Length: 71
Image 1 (cartoon, rainbow, N blue to C red):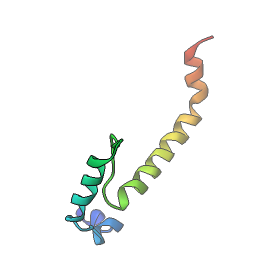
Image 2 (cartoon, rainbow, N blue to C red):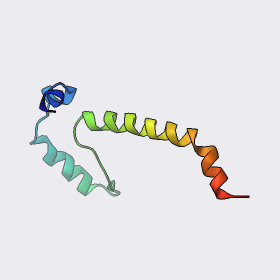
Image 3 (cartoon, rainbow, N blue to C red):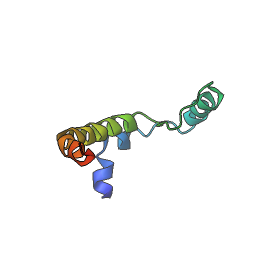
């Protein structure tokens, strides 16, 4: 597992922890702060891939979901 983790793109570029302070303050000071936010460069790409896969599954099974709704 450690070997697989060390091969991830984010493993070689972990970012600068001290940069987190500024990012958090921007969120806290925003007029409308997000309920959720990613920090770093990699998480958004990972989530996009995951959600595209989920959406594809949901679209594939939508006829069954509509069947469950009834007439």
